[in-house]
Image (cartoon, rainbow, N blue to C red; front, side):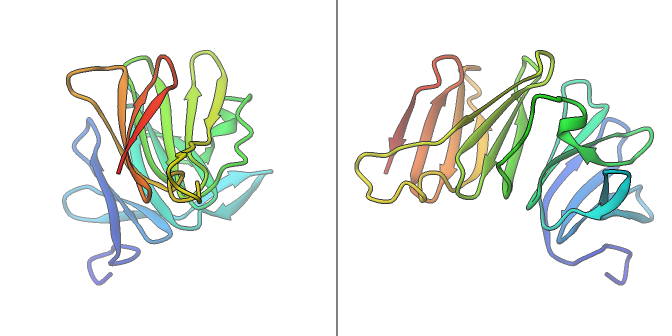
Length: 186
């Protein structure tokens, strides 16, 4: 905080194509230029500024020109040239995310945004085709599917671009992005 960070609690970090470091910390996103931090903690909705809530995840689209953030209130994005965060529904009108509590975000090679959540499963947002899907996962060996749908992080499989690995409170999940099928490892 003494150096300009909004909070000392850092949960995610990415570097943009211009060399700036972006930090998710507490209820803010901070941009570090090598000397100073600039903090962003609000978004524009209904012509007014509103606070993000907890910021948990950062990711850039394929072009590297837009930063997407996952927060307690959903997904927001901003151009890097003029930083002003907006709900993802401004970019993809069909997205009416009932899902909040975003824990991680990543983009695949097809410009599809994948978001994991705390308690609500997996979300797929096809930005170029203005399409949205939500996947509530089920593990028949567990009584409570809330654990399997509390996905903390995700990673693309380096050998198979159709596979996402999901780290959940109910086990490790191998999710096929083409067939939308998955296997749970416990």
